[in-house]
Image 1: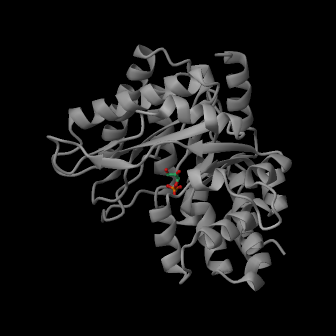
Image 2: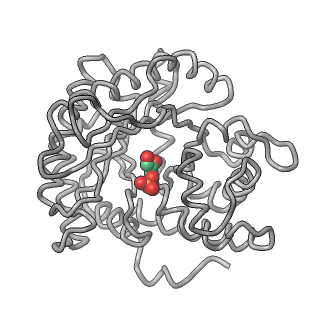
Length: 342
Ligand code: 13P
């Protein structure tokens, strides 16, 4: 392992004013997104859609530091035969790859999940590196409910995240460590704080035990936020203040950067929260975005599977990428939302 090079890639992923595009939806998830816009999900439509994003050159060269790909995409070619990975590299962004293989029910823990994909991971990482991937992602899922999460679910998911991270670093790939506490429930923001604190503390404990070099990883956490069904929604200022307070207590300053997931927040909420956090001075790490839905919902809708809408889809993506770029510098303002790229 060459830690200096891992650190260089990690820092490039959180370059000021840039963030990550999470375009790594599994075939099942992208089908759900395409169902919403009445587009059949085929290898061809998935390729066309992602090619549209990667060819939105203003977004890719100015606002996007790296793209998380799904296994299918990393091997696909654009319509003119250029590998999609090369399109990303040519724009100056770094290709990355989702390497977890989804979740399974966790035995003994009703309602809880464990992420799978460790068994053949070392060999897969080698192939992905050869194909151009310089970072990877593994998502652990922690749900909040009346009697969950259990200590067991937190422990085994943190253990798997650290196993994955250690294997990535051995393969000269920067691991994005993503322990996602879901915002699906009716819990309030303080319950999210408490659960996320337990999850992050256990995750960093496991990372240490398994000798993961913190300088060669990126953390992708949820924000501290009320559940979607909670009657008590927190203000932007409260989300920002509690998220930063929590991260400061749990995340060592040696970590090169933090790139949040959007987790089902509206586009504008995800941007406003990131912006509010970046208006805080004296943060120990760069804070940026690694959004899936909050970057892609608008371009998906604008595109709607039609070749004649590709230009509109690109503009919608450029706009969201620019808004989040500004938020990563604490320079976003709500009235900029109306001024769409043209
Ligand atoms: P969302 O921003 O849609 O949560 O997706 C990010 C991601 O990569 C989840 O694993």
